Length: 412
Image (cartoon, rainbow, N blue to C red; front, side, top):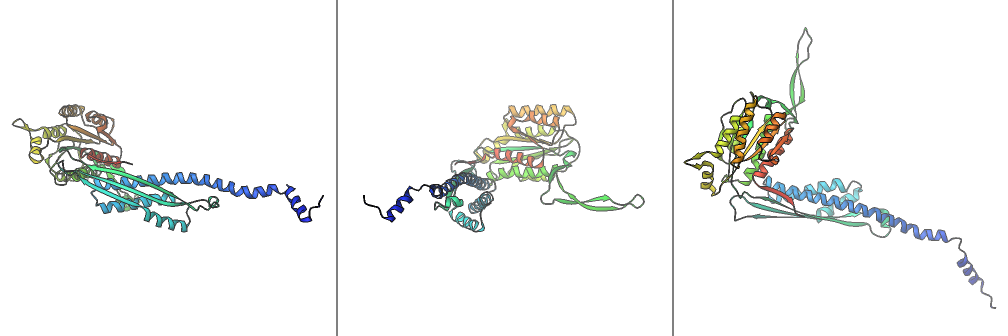
């Protein structure tokens, strides 16, 4: 038998020696395990980032659509609003763990890769300002991957999202709206909402002694009063009507206020300025009796001359349409006498019978006032319970939006 050389014997011995196998296998397998763990972590992070980016694009698209239709901003301003909104939302949710270098790269890529397109269409087969806006937003950025995943040579993963929203303003039917508003003494009370423009006010207080009385001053929170909250809410309601009908050829508004008795009403006129100015001049005094005021609103909307409804004739002459009629009824308290509740309910029933849509808002009102307004509303969806100035404002904005048929929705 031929003897193997010492070199071959050494190679054979090395091959047959299993003492270092674990270390060798560990050296090969551990990086793969780490990389696999990194992939699992990064997949979870990618799903989270994708959802956050989708939420941000959805919100930006809706914000731009809403501003276009409700505030009448230009398309260029809407694009800027959407871009700023998207950048702010994304930055808050996506960049918390990024280094300064990664953040700079994110902002550059994100800005370059964000596309915003807005299309405006004006209907030609309807009377009035009938517009539709489509807002399309798409964006993507590179999400930094974990150090473990980078072992496989992949440093980033692209995350993308796209959203589309549609907003429309259609005043296919003309409308006449009468406001019935409480201006009783309790409307001078403070709400729990601080005035954003003037958050503090100076208050006098006694700071001397019994023998030497003295008056000092201090700054205290300046809360919005109920009557001022009503004025703001009215302006926001009518803003929707004015946006839908900028020429004042479709919308007629009027207003009447009440405390212990009805005040002189502002008759129905074209546009919204007359009603807004009437409400701006209101002051809060006296008791509460809504009966005559609601009756006046009903009779103004249903007034007839020579057997013809005056409101219908005014619209027919101006815009060739029969108007939808609305009463917006608001109170912050109880009527002084239950007989006033009975009288008010009687005219509410007449309004419903004659297809007048009655929206009611109980503003920080006690139980009996709430019950009255709930019973007066055309449906439960026409009744609002507002416990602070912000809720009053939202209720009036909703009424304005519904009356002017403005809609904003996400389409993708």
